[in-house]
Amino acid sequence: MVKLTETQQMLKDLTDANGVPGNEQEARDIMNQYISLYADEVTTDNLGSLIAKKVGKAGGPKVMVAGHLDEIGFMITQIDDRGFLKFQPLGGWWEQVMLAQRVTVMTNKGNITGVIGSKPPHILPADQRKKMVEKKKDMFIDIGASNREEAESFGVRPGDSVVPVCDFTVMNNEKLLMAKAWDNRIGCAIAIEVLKQLKDSDHPNEVYGVGTVQEEVGLRGAKTSSQAIEPDIGFSVDVGIAGDTPGVSKAEAQAEIGKGPQILVYDASLISHKGLRELVVDTADAENIPYQYDAMAAGGTDGGAIQLTANGVPALSICIPTRYIHTHAGILNQDDFDNAVKLIVAVIKKLDAETVKTLTFK
Image 1 (cartoon, rainbow, N blue to C red):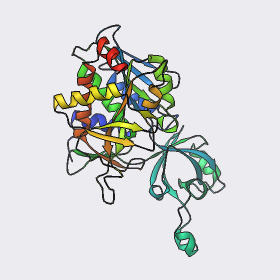
Image 2: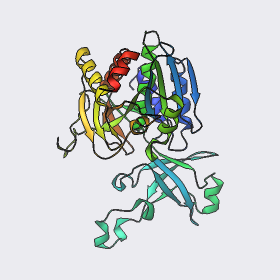
Image 3: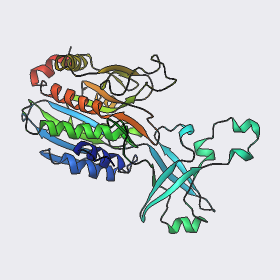
Image 4: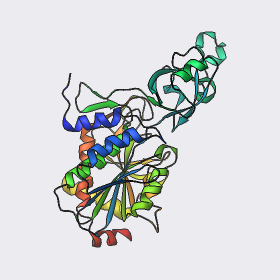
């Protein structure tokens, strides 16, 4: 068994925690446990986002570094007469990756293990075997209950959260880490580590490490937390698509794990701010920090909400290339995490009032 480093233990604690949109408390508690060690003040907004403040220069520019606490999952909507559970996806799920996967149903009486099922292909007409099984219409969760009453006796109710099952795993190449919920506990980990690196350092600003809620269903926590902070600069830290697996062309996805964090020039919610982007790239070049440019035509990040706060906020998304996002198990390279932290810390140290004013209108 591999002995985990201090950083890997934090990543394990964050990813093993359960937290779907609207029920992020377990993940928030873990993030708070770590980030409170390096923050001057930790608060929570009324939607549930965690906001950790670290003051370098009081009254200096406010820099927001936001990762979202929620992972994709499901919500129970019905219990049928035979004790099977119908569900609503929370976040974007592709039917291909769902069937026969283990899940955890979070009830007031404790967690229950289940599996996602559907009608066996052996009894389907030949033409239907080739069709995609529809997640809302044809899938259900089997928790081993004999009927509705037994399922209810287990504590299951409509509205209960359901999360994927995948324990944090250090792979044989020990830089590669597999877990559920990299999207986006890795962003929360970056926010924690940035405040840790700044703990005993001078920086000409106030830094806010934020764990936002409900990103996967519409960037909702980013809206409320950024309204509470009113940042001058916003960084969204998230996962990005890794294109280094069989069948993926460079035209479809160009990033590779282990080649540095992705600087997103564009996603469906955010056109990266030119001045901020150039400062980040110039800093990476000067510090010899590897990075990769990328663009994401579909999907958005918290930066899309942060940029619209008050009269506008220069914002940029920095992502960690990750294989198999929006499934039960993702894989990333810890070097990319380390380099993302190093880059963001180096940029923060440059963000004094004059620099922020200059790049805002660049």
